[in-house]
Length: 75
Image 1 (tube, rainbow, N blue to C red):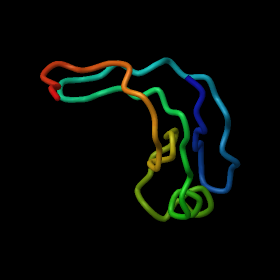
Image 2: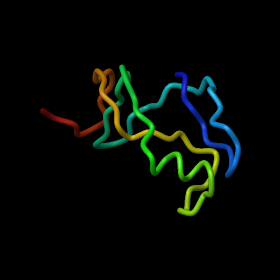
Image 3: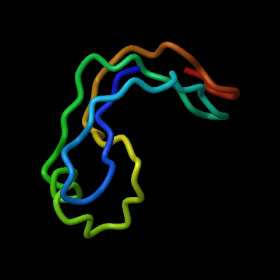
């Protein structure tokens, strides 16, 4: 998968290719169609004022299609 990765405060986000995730128990994996980077995420890239240990994939405002289910996922 392609993702924007935060590597450290003051550094630009890096577009990288990462391994596709595997769902854990009670989790799902989405094929993300669209993802937004919010203002809080951008503040993290500038100052890292929250406990955000790089490297980390930012973005939590997304929409997509469920492509894998973990154990125990129903409905």
